[in-house]
Image 1 (cartoon, rainbow over the protein chains, first blue to last red):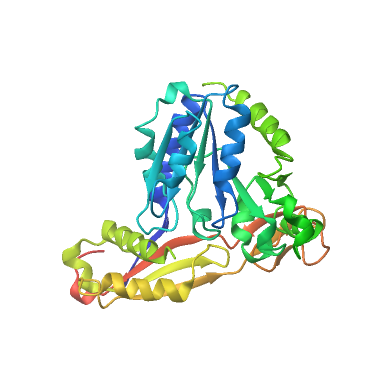
Image 2: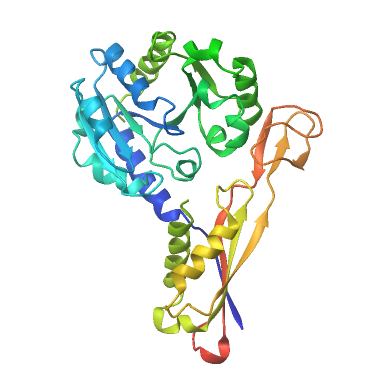
Length: 220
Length: 120
């Protein structure tokens, strides 16, 4: 028996395409976020509120990832920003090559901020680098305060945590302090925003952070 | 739920080292999986058998090297195994830690039956 030593990452193909994406984003000075959460946490609603607030101040484009339908892309298109829908047809996450293909439909030299809304799933997307500057994980109060402990990889790999639906806290057995505490046990460097897409509480400070970060990224 | 595509990626990587005509000789593929790699080993093994079914690799087995999740602590200068994902140092409770291991997802090696092969 002979042994061929390989020692290679299983997802190296994805990582290589992600590297190419990142290079393209850097060349064009685009700040890119990969937005992840479980289904129904409010990613698309956050996008809508964000677009309402800052689409006049930044050139924003959106890539929507869904297992089926272009419903989300239609919601976003109402805000008159370039949007590309990726339909994964069953796959539970976006991969770098799908994003690379989608970029072909966008004018890269005309974007300051690109938001990629991943497929609603707190497990699989954490493995796949898309070339983003950072991952933004959304946890909603209706999901309970133990989500970070149950899905640590996603919270570990994210840089920003948006806690959504805080207007519902009075009606839920979800403790905001416990939720944040659990997130900090997984990833103490998380930047946290508490928001409600219904009352718009917290949307402004999230958008200010976005503006600041997107403007800091000049084309190289 | 992405174990199927991961199993396919593993088979693709094997294909870069052993051409299809030689793949009947592959006996074992060793894969390293960290406790926080986001991969369910049982599911991966099941998907692997599905992917190699009716291919020259059909006789190959997958061996999994499990890697525990460990963090190194900057406060007490220790490295310890902890619950996957938790940033807390289990010894001193500090969150000033760095992941040392547990996120691996690698193809380590391929065992090829020499009796049947002219390959290395």
